[in-house]
Image 1 (tube, each protein chain N blue to C red):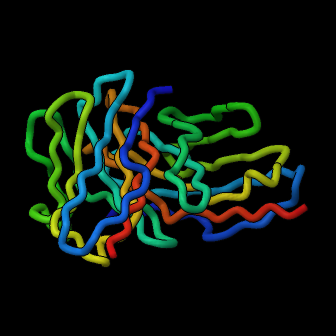
Image 2 (image 1 turned 90 degrees about the horizontal axis):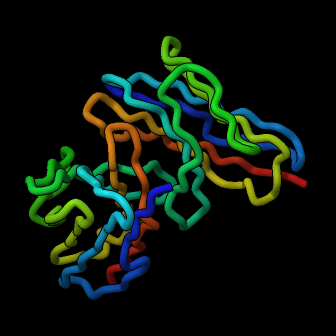
Amino acid sequence: GAVVSQHPSRVICKSGTSVKIECRSLDFQATTMFWYRQFPKQSLMLMATSNEGSKATYEQGVEKDKFLINHASLTLSTLTVTSAHPEDSSFYICSASRSDTEAFFGQGTRLTVV
Amino acid sequence: GQNIDQPTEMTATEGAIVQINCTYQTSGFNGLFWYQQHAGEAPTFLSYNVLDGLEEKGRFSSFLSRSKGYSYLLLKELQMKDSASYLCAVMDSNYQLIWGAGTKLIIKP
């Protein structure tokens, strides 16, 4: 199957700093990438959808100024958590779609804000 | 609204068969996915159904009935490593994944 690489897998940062998470489709062109957040013991929550070359579409309740998403190429999307706070500590996962019918997930990034 | 329902928890015995059901109501349908998730890890893709019927892949099979808004994941010859959460997700008309809350499967010796 297609490979989606997410980096880093784990990150610890100080409160008030920013963290960037990368999502790369290694062997296919991803026209659409999705960013999810998982709260403990809950389902994945879609944060935003990004299409290459255009602004991301954020889900209701997600602060677009806090969670900056860039999808500059067909193989790379980034999520930057700005001015991180402890409540932003979570598991962030990206997925990439190479067609209208398939989505492949990255390994996930566990963010801990101290 | 959009809704995905699946049981919260199931228990089965090693070597046995278990069926995890998923019912959905979504705005449009572009396929149904099953994912396996071990604690602390990202979900791993198991199967994808877009047409009615049964898709078999080794010990795992997935069934879809679009008219009934229903799917199930069938796991055969259960192994202890199959203990995990199983997530049902539907891709809606906007190609976004709508996720169920997951079914925690506990395998006992």
